[in-house]
Image 1: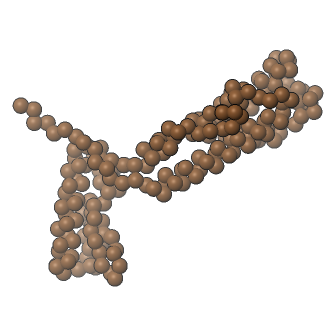
Image 2: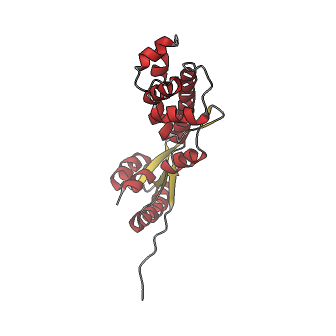
Image 3: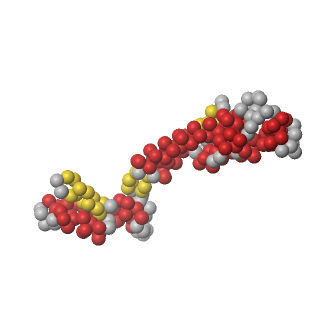
Amino acid sequence: MNTKTEFTPIFLYREEERITATNKLYQEWLVYIQKGLDVTKELFDEPLTDEQLTNIMSGGWKAVEGLMREKLNFPNAKIETLLDLNGKDGTNAKLALNHVVNRSKTINASISSGNVIMSEDVQKMIEQEYTYYTKSIQQNELLEDAKQLSDLMNKLIGNKIIANIDVYQTCFRLKIVESKNTGNENHEVVPNLKNIRIMK
């Protein structure tokens, strides 16, 4: 007879603020990457294809050098020489492409009609990264213990058996529960989900 308990992850919490902040940061990166590519386009007399822009986005300034040598048919020329011959200055483009490679990889960026877009999967990845579940049977048991302990302590608080002033220190020592101030110096004990998440 198999008596092994099957583990089922239980939702703990989501860090909504971090999800929002990461989304905002990645949108700023989209603008940054687009700006880098737009400045780089000015170095070329002909419009660049999505494939060429993708290569620049993933290869940075080295990809620009390679593309310019290819277009001008000078495979061994120095990039500075080629830019000078065409009356171009690559300083701004080189600066604008800083961090483009790493950031575009992080947000899994792609090019469509010359515009940088972020993969739809990235939003799911952000939410998954900051959404936490229990990882073991032991954590599930701790969560259940914390819920029962919270109910008991709240009952004792309501019956004035535990004074409000003692609640915080008691919870601090127990670790799996925490005290929430509900106003008027009243406290409610709830499971400490962040502590439970990092417990074995």
